[in-house]
Image (cartoon, rainbow over all chains, first blue to last red; front, side, top):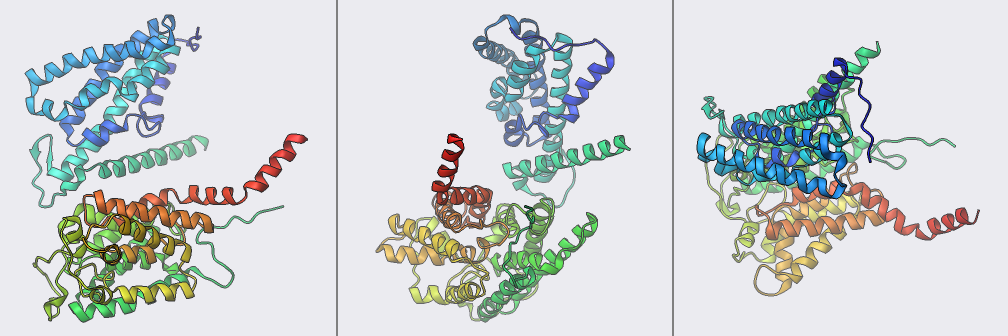
Length: 212
Length: 330
């Protein structure tokens, strides 16, 4: 049986966990997890926001569940259990998106929504981190991870939408020149690489300042 | 014992990076002169645009990043010139400029500048512009026009090149003499096959070109072309058309031999050439574009260090085994 990591229930510790997962060890830019949906589906800001919401909707309950019951379950049962749970949540989310919001958006995302259930973000955070931490920390980490993922996918997809269609959230930006090829995967790889480098640059700057 | 930590390009005694770059630029002169016989002065200006933009981008980039400017080693000039040599004579002037800026600003400088770049910047620039503007990039003029192309703005649709004819399942009707003399539509610097071969020989004599890489690359391309001919008829004709069309030969001579990104070890170099050849032919057979040599170069660049290590390991297997046994017995 795994031992829970010690937790002193102070606000500053929760704050540390939050900022670590959100920026300092950003799930996409530093840990390089969950890149696939960004590259394949993060083409417009709308899709980015929908994928963020779906990831959060799956990750929060999965993390909480695994934090409370994870230890009592045998290791082989954990992954199938939260994958099935995540798939059920996503089924609801997909129906909601299709009926209530936009059929076109659903049609363009229908491959990627179910894939969120077996996303590495979910399996890594829910299956790894949450099991060895108390529920408060696990939930904080889930929120921060979702926000970190959302920040990156929204940034990348907004830039790609502006570059490739000249629009933002479907509204025209009145650009003369558009570059339709920015919707291809290589543009997302480039953007991710440069944002990761920028994050590292900021981190080293902050560490230097802290050392002084 | 102390080791001296050097930085690529690793040069022999008496060699200098600037001289190697100068050799490559000298080799470009006859190619430019030859193309201007077909198309007038426009190709020369295109090459100069690429070269100037790359040098300016490198200078400004180094100033912005507060680094010592590395313009004087000439690698930026070579990068820009290669990009200029590989665009179509019909392309607008901003096309080589865009490629050169991408190559320097997005690929070379972030990786650490001259001597530290993981990927060949010229190949990256070409890959970027052929992905983003395939309409301009693969629009090649007919060399048999008989009059020079206008220097200013140009709106002209070209004719299919042999590589695109092969890709669409057609039969390129070019005699070997026409192919050798560059009398077929293609990029500025990559059609004059006879002159390209002479340039390769010059660079080999000046030790800027590794015969291991170029020969193994061309040999593997030729073997694949002979085994799976896309043009009907004898496999010899298929080999000729495949090797001469596109910018395969140019890539084998100038891009794969980049002293920074190529492996240093002879066995690694042979493996590198063969790997690149297989990838180029695969891109031609199954890729989206008629020519994907730049993508193939970028892919093999990623394996350069691994191939180097593997080559060294294979050759020193006996020694490694002996050392291990000795350690084991102790």
